[in-house]
Image 1 (cartoon, protein in one colour):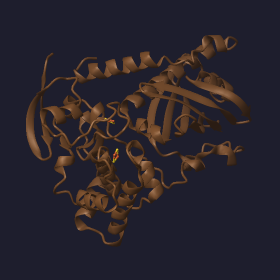
Image 2 (spheres, rainbow, N blue to C red):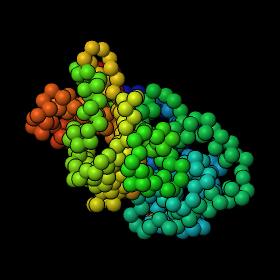
Image 3 (cartoon, rainbow, N blue to C red):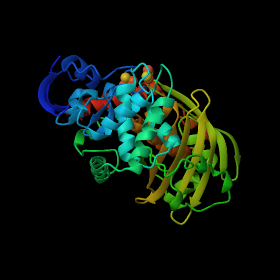
Length: 404
Ligand code: FES
Ligand code: FES
């Protein structure tokens, strides 16, 4: 296999290494640099045990290729000796018996450091949400949460100049995403959950405002955003009529199933299967329409019975005329996952998966417009998860090695 040479800084030391393109960062750190403090649990990006910092932001090293980190700075659990946040976290983890068996601890500490820097005001509920992507399998989270809360509380009572400076740097880089190199996407950085308060997700339930007909710009969901668009060879007015028909819109959404509909409100489920993740979110959604702008937002919220994970999202779409009998539909999906599946919301692979779902949605819309009477027969709402997963992986590999 051809090897690639990467220049990388690990725990402050620059090094140049030959690495096989398929080697993930976790194996590279453990096997080539003997930094065995980075623990590997699931190797699927699920458990968070392997979390390290890449250019200051927490990243899962088991789903990050080492070659994607060329030119970047990595910090592992062995490299925090001089870090003022980690000094406090170390003491707090000891004082609150948060170490337990210790297997998840390196990843927990990397995430905890991110919480302390990014969310000075976080309370217990918020800390638990932020830790949702790090799984402790031996005991529980009480000690870990208590340790993080105690560091936050101490800092609010007595600020530390060094940590205040680090927080300033973090903010200057717009939250948890530090660094701006082109390979940031390939390294699959975490995107922090940016709800303004802990009621944000539950307050997204649309039941209180069924009569609302305007797209309220000030009530946008905060979370991971994915944008996409598709074009169809139909007049914008014609497309708009379809896009405001809730049952037909739901019928075009891959994996969606409508159980009942009352006015602008729909109850049903959305099933998703992607790599190791399989979920069926049951819930309800409300369609808010701004006919003048030809834009609408479908606000939904649901729960997966198996994992007890919760999803909240807004699908904002606009229909634009881009020529005679030709329209473009822009789609903006903003979503938040809470619970055991939360870690998937941050994965670049999942965001690409969603983009492809948007493209499938576009194809289905075009199919319905072409054949309104035979809608059910012409629309493909089934997802072939293996095919989508394989095709995304393949396109990423090609991009990584300069192919088109
Ligand atoms: S080993 Fe990387 S997330 Fe589990
Ligand atoms: S301390 Fe043992 S897995 Fe978390």
